[in-house]
Image (cartoon, rainbow, N blue to C red):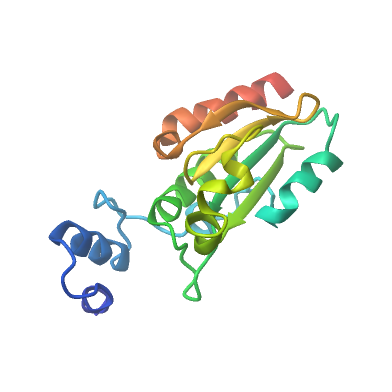
Length: 182
């Protein structure tokens, strides 16, 4: 039944690969056909890194309030959710469970700011002139995660979409932070 619903959700005239991707998403599989589950169900009982969800317009003031903070600060730039709970950006949707699982290894005290950006805001108005596309953020696309230096007000490290889909690499990065914290 889910497969039938996914097929109906793809408008006529879509290319075959897009239709297959939509069918996989409807069946609980990612764009590569791997079975997925919502991040909150992946590790029953495991503590996830707490996320503070912000609108894009509030990021600069939040980072200003953290100026000089000694704890690690991560900023995930991602798409807002549609009424059905999925993100409007399929790349962001695919990266969500990977980021959540990898973040399980992050040390306590990490600030994780999830900045949600609407489709209109990112694509149309202001679109290419969006302040996140300019210094000091210099984001070319979403999803993107920044390791933020609150003293220098600059990104120490930037993770693009391809980086955010590499579970082992991202997990290893968070584990190294946890090791430094101990």
